[in-house]
Amino acid sequence: MRRTTISECPDCGSKDLRKDREKGEVICKECGLVVEEKMVDFSQEWRDFSDDGGESKRRTGAPSTYTQFDQGLGTEVGTTSDFYKLGSEGAKDKFFRLRKWQYRISTAIERNLKVALAELKRVSSFLKLPKSVEEESARIYTMAVQKGLVRGRSMESVVAGALYAACRRHEVPRTLDEMGEASGIEKKEIGRTYRFVTRELGINILPSNPADYIPRFASALNLSAETQSRSVEILEQARDIELTSGRGPTGIAAAALYVSSLIHGEKRTQREVADVAGVTEVTIRNRYKELIKKLKLTKEVEKNKKK
Image (cartoon, rainbow, N blue to C red; front, side, top):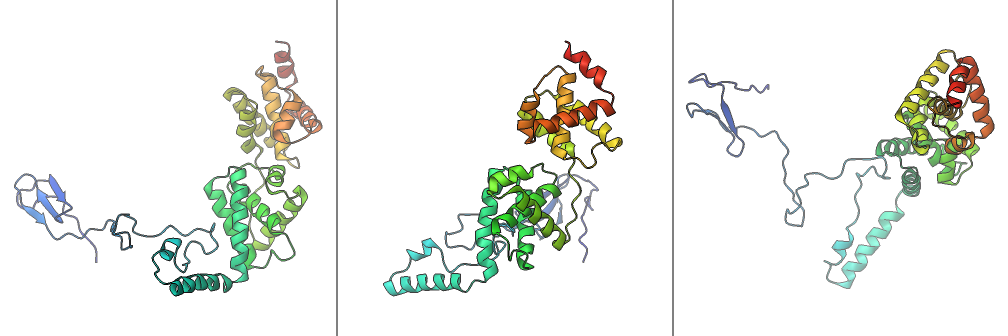
């Protein structure tokens, strides 16, 4: 059944109508005719049937999320507040007994997810990742557990691998070094687990874009917006001649930022740039030489060095 909306008064033809949502009526402001009555309210029904007397106006529970082991849809045997409403000691003992058995009959997957998702939230908070990345990584980890990919591997390494995969999918620049520092797992182990999980789950991830790292590095080095924009242009030129292929995204991004800082007179040492990017000075030096040679930036860099 299709709902039609009356746009003008059938009596005087006026289009100046007023909706009275409390009475469910549409009234013409010109002649006062009740154009429509007993309207159906299609908005949300703010009613609450909880024990608190309807003080809270929530209509439903929290949305489902993969960051909880039961996706937020499970139920528990009572809450702590319910315990104090029980009168006899027998009822209290029964309350604790039921809660204990509810935990015991949970599956191995549920128990694994309870611990792993708590670790995932901790690492995500340490890296200051957005909620979208946390949700995606929890989904990836849940699928890995359901397919039995966690067996034979440490839970922490799979959590770190799932987080790294989610960062790559959402184009949130985080390096394996940062992931290793946050999780306490070696970088090689995280990379190995990340490749295994994405391959087994069929997750397609594009190569990292070096330009995604520029804002973070520029902010840490306190460089201007002009220097940041110029470094992105340098990376685009390097990509056009396939100079970025086969090279680490953090190293080439840091080198482009270093070149741009020299051009704009905001000199930073190779050591400072290397520390921010998490690479060695040798990497910065090699990428820097390649960029100024292939892109013919030597004269521009030397000109601003003398200023």
